Length: 340
Image 1 (cartoon, rainbow, N blue to C red):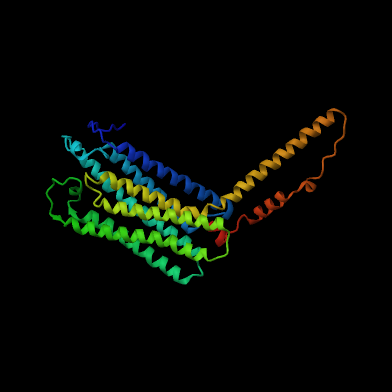
Image 2: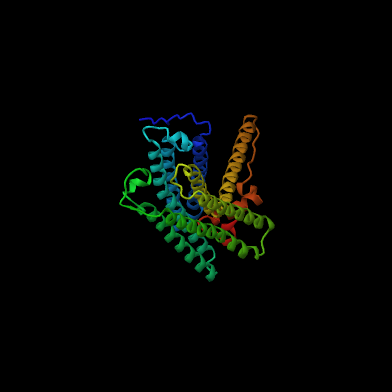
């Protein structure tokens, strides 16, 4: 059955814009994670634990986005004064899907950060203090994230009162409790995102490396600052499950989740240059061989015997580098190559 979105003639309806933006960044995160899987399998000949965590995070983001899509079809993006005109109270179903989307959404944020933690621990294994910092902070945000889900769903009894405020309740917490916990959790998530990139940049900046690589680190840091900004914007829309703030909360949540997945996969992608080099070298070699064959046939038709040089004599510097690239396949990237 094809769902049709209610038409309330709201000139300020931003539902479609929110849906397009959130699905765009979600699809971008899917593309990045697929590239990550391909690079890891092609060069490393297998996936590591942090890869599996990021794959799970991407699946959770897709699940969250599916819930957002359902909320859109029930009126997400339409202003409150128009939604309340609906005699069928379809806005309650919209709020229901917004609340449901927070479960895979929060789990996505947690899982993606666990993946980043595992990746950084492997890269900076000789930095004991940084490993402890990563472990403690990741454990903290995991606990806080899970508690935020639990508190959201146990604050009222029955739970349906979350999206149907007209229902009588036997238990209803002061909303300030959940809101304050959400603010604290958001701040810790934001600070964790900042330190997960800031500390590695400080460590690596002291190393002797080309300026190009250092500039790459700056770009990565800028992306991390973007996630911090999104965390702050998400905090300003707490509580998300209200008609006034549902649209903004869904938007900032989805952007943050997708961006964390993308930034967490960026350090694994520079090895893609080896695959591109392999493809280009194979293509150039094939074209050169085809040209030799065509030339030999033309001379043979003219009765001229053409001696084709031995392929080993046609080796170039590029061929040698290509062999080095092939020889590197199957090895885990070093610290410098992995980050940049």
